[in-house]
Length: 332
Image: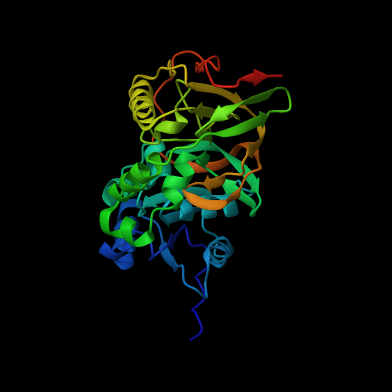
């Protein structure tokens, strides 16, 4: 059956991922109606299917003249849509969080409840956000959130899709406990082009944005998505108990806007990164498995225009967690 052509000059197009965790509980037509009523604009739904992927959906939306393209899905959907519209300064990104974690929405203060997310789109407050590109053994991919290496990547990547649909975020907790039982360290080298940092670690996070719940990305006092930098957090724990204590510490520090103070956590920021590990480690980009190390990350400042609440004010420049104390540390 041939798909009908989109009408010209559509103001809002929703890229709808019906396979997202909570999409089954919602009607795309109801969301379309509610969004039209809230914004007063023309709203069209583009359904992602096997024969009509995200790229085709976004291309159709841009051809139709959409001024706002809304990613309705999880972080993977948001990341893919963001990459496809980043070259256009005429299109802004809206988000309807339908995934398991919805970290992008959480990091930007977009409500998890669909009605609240629609209200954010209707207010049309636009923020510039950085975008990054990650290159691994799998290829090259856009990143709006973070690149995780080691423990976090293993825990998320090894969580079954069925478990996520049944248990939601609790499925990640179960997977994390299994990974903690087999906690291992690896050698890591991070080259920023100006410095080379070498040490042993269990987890490395390179974040553009990260909600507080992504605790392993919160070594610095703040993770800002519009500063042109990637924030690196390195965690080294020699036992399950130390890893759990470190996670609790990072969560508390992130809530208070303070850098980590444990000796087994260090952080710094850079515009570009090349990360190698021994042995090679699994890599997670915006919540999805994407090859193994080595990893190259390049930040593109203000590449996105996102409909989101204004960020809370930050007093002074972000503070880093000291690298001193990380095992086998060398800085060149």
